[in-house]
Image 1 (tube, rainbow, N blue to C red):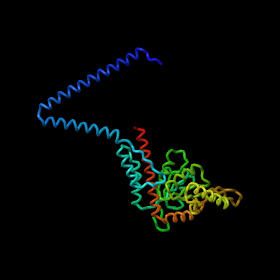
Image 2: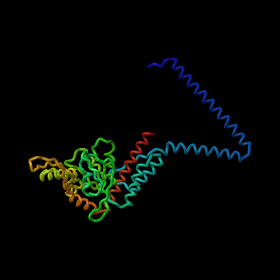
Image 3: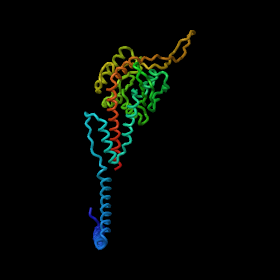
Length: 342
């Protein structure tokens, strides 16, 4: 497309005007600088040195501001090898570099502070993780009958992270952590559950049958950070012996394919109990609907947990590694947000 002659003339005039202004500004600055210099040379030496010092300080300040705003704020590319484990010194160095660049590191720092608080407290954290309606809260209720766990027949009753105290056979204090169920409609609860699972020592992955694709993805994510894990098939009383054996074998295969230890004690079948509706026949032939308490059977779960907790130093180290990985993820999110804002 040809540019109209009037537009070309206007552009040429603008270029000429800018050239004239630049020449005039250069002459004005040069004349002013020479006049100031001549007066300083003729005046007291002290005034000359003070003037030169002030100008030098202003120049240094300008260079520092440019370096601070442009050069120093660049985030160095950090490539973490998936095979290399993060150490506390690694993540703290990354935090220092990111903070110097102007990145908001508060979320990553909060993870390390929470880890330090849990290390000082010394309690063992067991996280009950799974999709909604698999019976996580009911299992905690079966282990700690005196707790005020809310069990809702509609499912998805846990919308926040809650801890319940329990002591195992060895007398160790254990915090049972109930997290929001995954697979619900409310946004963000699944991510909150995954993060709390990473902060725990051991994850009890609760299901009520064969694993769905989202459950497999969550299982692989937890195992990728080295999280000790037990698959807990709840509501096992719904299946006969053959069906239960087939499901247990299938869960073992899932665990093996996801990269976990496919030991028999890593997959257990339990029944959390609770109330069930039954139909009773009266003496006169009438039928009456009633609710009966279903007994809980969680003994194999207690045995599996005690075996995992036998090596406390190992699960402490693996918990720390998982939290370092979580802090690194939080830092990566902050760096991405910083780049977007820039």
